[in-house]
Length: 501
Image 1 (tube, one colour):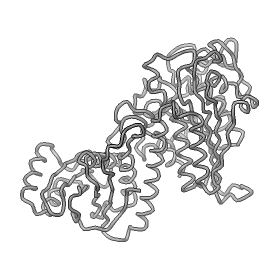
Image 2 (cartoon, rainbow, N blue to C red):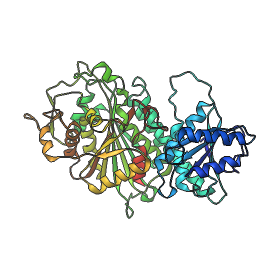
Image 3 (cartoon, rainbow, N blue to C red):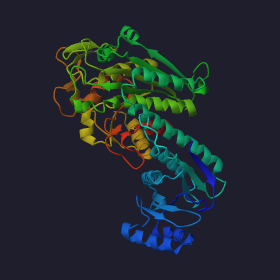
């Protein structure tokens, strides 16, 4: 871990940039005066005029300083502390990390000597944002020998040290788990296969001291169970499909696994298409360029179980991933074919590129065998959701108002953008087939994100269920923020973890 908390006097380390949070221009001026450098004060005033810096949220000044005690001070404005904007803190931290990396610093120090900022919440914000901002996917690049960046958070005294240390460790773990999801999604499909997801799940289970267990179903087992929708998608793939089932059992459940008061059983289902060519309904070449990301939901589920293995939770959790490639071949399912899903319902497959809902249908049905109180699925499911909400916002579909409120609040707290979409009952008619129970694409092209959610809804019948369409933010074509660069974002890890706790 590259993040530590220390007790230090302000500006006590030479050759390392310091980050100070301020809520006004007057506060920033006072800190500059402490440097005792007339040239720094003059330079600061020029920057204030040029940037119109007033200490408001999302404002920043980078002040080079010629001093024996500090080389650079970065002032991050946060505005009124009573209405602190957490995202402004994350954004400022991400920008500071990028500045330090760009200037090849070895160390970056966050100054919390002002007691208003010396809180567990503030430490968590800094730690998670810094961990995410430092992420780089360099697996396929030659080493550039740039120094790794050490983060120090300076506290005013030792009162917060023990609680702060615990908060930093957990916040760092959340950031690291998110970065694990990013690594999985960024890895090309040549190397990231259903077997690779199994390997990651195996490592997680083995690190859990027995709280996380893993079972894997192969093609023959899934066929025997009756997962006809999932197996239809897997039919054209040479690489073998793997149905992954992770189970987290709280230690308090004991051998009899009895529920304690307030304890629930929760199922997380992640779409796990490790590469989506579209099958025989082949995508255009441009549409395939980023289709290694079609297992982002699976990556989120694995990251959550990594955190469960480290820190646990009071609830029993099941994670399900129907992993496969969607490929064209002589064995691939054809448009017009009818398959039978695990719940016995028949599906007319009219477009083999609408494959995610098929795998999720069987995974959700299988999840219900374990009597969950809640099922949440995460999937890069539809381009229509991106058209509706853009590249930065995921769609939430559920008829459970309490669950909707909880997930929206959790997403807001961690800075992930989530917006509710309706499950309009009349639109469910668009998924009806004339020769089967359902068709896998609706009878018109409008409201595609909604009809995809409505396709899944009957398979979750009888259980509190939420569908998160993360097609937009899961893989960013451009940076989402100063702390989330382009590429995989690990979307959903922080929201689901916040919701669980």
